[in-house]
Amino acid sequence: MADRGDLGWKVTAGAAAFAGGFVAKKAISLAWKKTTGKEPPTNPESPEVALKEAIGWVVVMGIGMEVARLLATRAAARQWAKGTGELPSHLKAEV
Image (cartoon, rainbow, N blue to C red; front, side, top):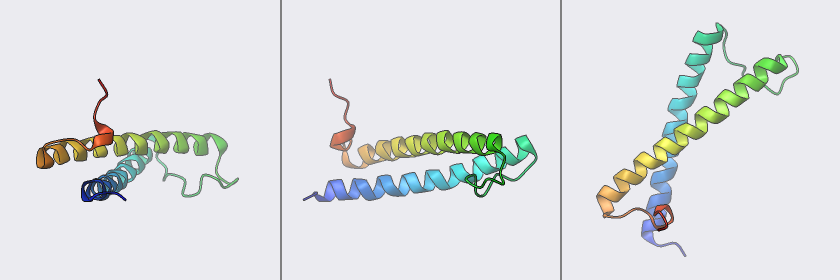
């Protein structure tokens, strides 16, 4: 069974990833609109969306969301380490 620290970290990391993803989706959508002049596709799987546009949206969104999740989790880990005195065990670099 997970101890309190593991559970606390999972909740913290999940909240950070959710917040990072929310902000990233808004930022990516805004950048897409400014760049292309069109709203991002709401359903890229639809055959009514041009394949080039659908692939472009999926690639940009996938990379953007993963980068946001990574940055948010790393920021949360830094704050966790400040509060607890150490990183969660699975984030410690192996030497």
